[in-house]
Amino acid sequence: MKTILTLFLAICSIVPLAAQEHHPPKPPRPEEQGPRRKQGNEMLLERLQLTTAQREQLKKEQEQALEKVLTADQKKKLSQLRQQQQQRKEEEQLRQRQQLKDRLAISEEQAAKLQDLQKNFMESMKKNRDQLDQTIAQQRERARSLMETHQESLKKILNAEQLQKFKDMMRNKMRQGMEKWREHRDGMRQRPAAPPNAPDARNSDAL
Image (cartoon, rainbow, N blue to C red):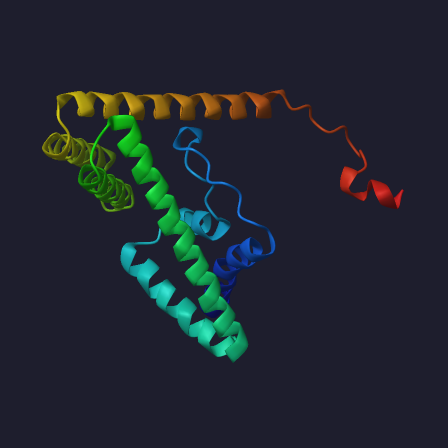
């Protein structure tokens, strides 16, 4: 069973890359539209609530499984796809950094430091949420401590005016994300239920 799960997740990690090759990547969405949708295998890992050690072990087993089942040509193709994915990731980071420079009127050095700070903060918050041995109260206290430390770190990078612009930008981003979530929720509620025994639209061509 463990081997089957490993192979399944390994294959899932390849499918998005292969799909990107056949379909030109869409322009990156602006930050205001919320976080990009998570891949199915990432959602699966979150539902399983794996620890960091388990994730690392699973990643190692995925690589070992791929080494066994892929041909030499397939391994070469996988390497190319991963390089393309890394390149797109770097281009997205450059776009986000430029956006910070333009909106906050900051230097390249400030933007790079701010980008790294935000990345580390989000990773720390996620790690805190994944700590299953903590109580809810402990998680909240840890999150509060991380936020306070984050605020102090921001003050070392941005001046008062820049910091206020950054806070306003993050508030707008959060507000728009909530509005989009409410629209999606309301749309799901208003969707009419399918009548009993109704033919599936996907099979209508067969009728």
